[in-house]
Length: 299
Image (cartoon, rainbow, N blue to C red; front, side, top):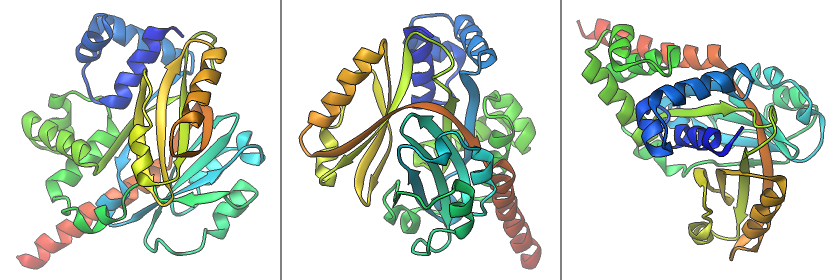
């Protein structure tokens, strides 16, 4: 990988549905070159497309991120085992420090599922809230058309507007507008699946930064990095960025540790994400059916 590869992947973190031409304009190459680079990275196992699905609050559920810190069976384990746990929406692994499982919970205070402990071989080191829990109460419910677009995007994440229209049964304009609105409002999650350990050269990193207070998170910023998720219980943020060498990665990690208000830093290189696709699709299908039943009852 080179820096341009990393910048392309970073642009997909920032704007996952951007056109190849749009990504190329920000990176300084043509859209054709972006497409070719992504195809090469996909063949090399570095890039595995977009992970797409409903955010937990869109389903009326609560997000809890189970974090398994350094060492343990999950570092070498099978993410598929985690994704078979009923509440898990996706799981990810990073080298060398952590694996995580995202739980979508009806009861946010319920104990960690025994099935998750069994699949991981141990209990998670911590269970954090990756978003402000107030968003669940404040978010307006998605409409039947929104859910149809959601399912279409899950089927073909990088589909053109016209293709989204075909899949959802809506016009291309309406399908694209609804997709982009759901992404902007946080109802739709979408991020590139990356394994940055497959090649030498420049590489992406992720960093979990725990803070002493929510206010301290405002100063957690680095060049060539995007903030992916911020959570408040406990205060912390996930960043993704790129570096040219492992020596530079060490410098970045030390800079994060030295920032005012930072309590701890977990620095790692992503090794891929696995979606519980059938479960996510079933949840979306249940929402579509719920609206269909309401229409039938109203007739």
